[in-house]
Image (cartoon, rainbow, N blue to C red; front, top):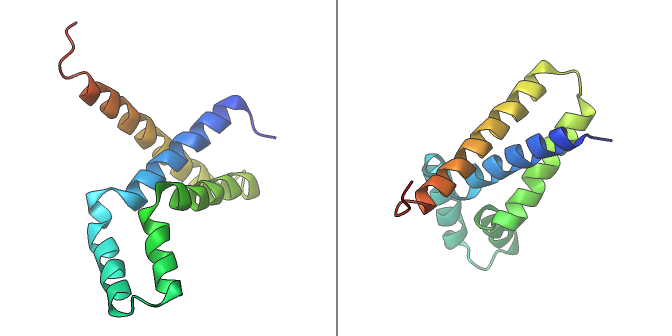
Length: 109
């Protein structure tokens, strides 16, 4: 079983990975290639599935957080997995804090 702090870390890592996969500009070229690939055969259900997967935060988030959880549980003593998950967790916390800060633009201290 995982502890509450581990759960928070895994949730933050999953959040950040999901945002990266669905929204971040760094992956726009890859997403654009997938969208172009799908438009060449729009009747293809496999291509439609892939586009849906990379466009949906819930769909992609489910798979990515499952992957993070599996890596965390299956390789508990692997330093690369630990550092990778923690890196995404810290980035996820930073992204959430930035969103909170951006929502307070008109607030006074």
